[in-house]
Length: 401
Image (cartoon, rainbow, N blue to C red; front, side, top):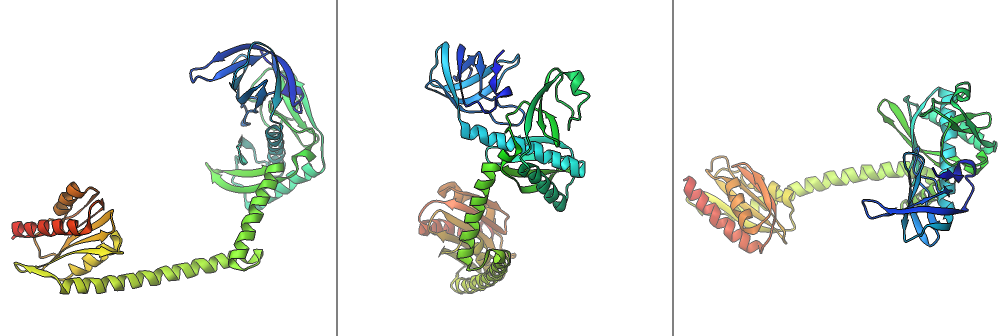
């Protein structure tokens, strides 16, 4: 069993130990076992520490059954004496988030009777899941209460208790396991069983900032930032707001109204563009219909269309075949080409079959019905595709006549 220095001294940054064993797992990773360690293993929703063992880099720490801690390393270590160093910035950031989570969870419990059913300390932010659907006002109250405890700079004690003693204590939640328990005591505010690393006083949390919340399975998931992460989040928000106000030439308080105005203008511009696009499609359709070649009483349109996408081609083709006695094949350019095959209701032609023949030769894919089919991704000169399409169209018309 590995002695866990972080249990009693979470501020330990460097330590000496004995390497007891070095093995390789099924993924080819080197695993080192020490007699004692200050490296925290991934557990209880808190990520592991990283750092160094001698010249080797510790990239993960795993808590095995039976109390052995495995250090996943990049590099080599040998059995014997070794020095370990914790990545202190990462450790302290996790300590701030974890202690902040205890304080925020306790605030929800005190104010709302809202139990925290799970928590997660991520790489960027942390979350708690509450068993109730919390209102925005209640979330703000809990955030304010948590920060009151932070700014009072209350001591955070580490205590140990056996199962019988723990049963008599006002723990915020039922312990997940029995036996001797490690307790984190935020003086006068929260007492919880926990194996994680924590700051010595609540003031070291810095601040607790709720970033967002959402409903999850009938409860509420609250995302929050503490200490250095809160500062990092504030800087990102500040820079985003500053850039936005410069671009829009408004004050920060005017941003929501400015964005709403831009959205309204964008919707109006989209509507006008759509109408103009439809009008232009009608003009193109009229011009192509007027230039159609007559074959056995059927007006045939086969053309390459520069600057039109698949939806535009469909609009033009549909407008052409609104007239009786028309068949049309339209190809976009440049490649990869979109393609539309369409025919009037009184014309015997399988548009989908023609599309299949064209994609078989020029690639791409698509589908449709006998009256209209469309595809995309065709490769080859537009003129060549149009020529082949014209031939298939005429053959199809003759077969259907």
